[in-house]
Image (cartoon, rainbow, N blue to C red; front, side):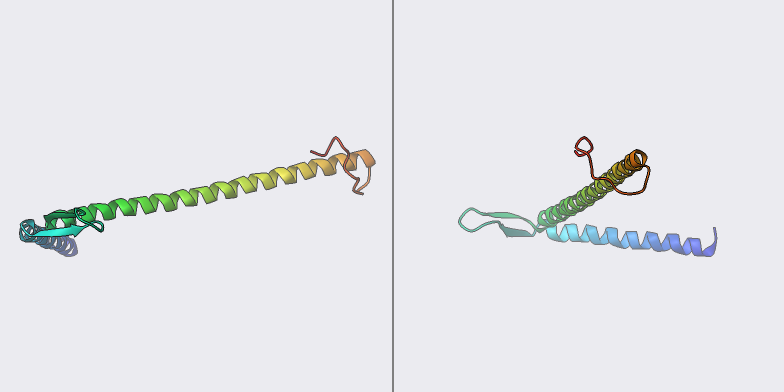
Length: 123
């Protein structure tokens, strides 16, 4: 292993160690601390819990919210893409029908003039 690889590995180990120590100290400090969470107006709409439990709950709610927003945005993008593809298919179908009509008209008259549509071609 070269020297830069060793520095990179030891830097990662150091950063993760500092984060682990911080999480451990945060847990110990906030485990016994009680707090009151207000939910709604009126009596009985508060919950008393530890700060650590509320922090974990807020973290989990943030993760769930992020996943839901990401899923909604991805679904909206997919719907837009489906509409675009459908519009492209419809445009191609219309162009194909128009090409068939032009071919029939030029074959029946023998010239390039546009004939009015017959009743059996409409629809």
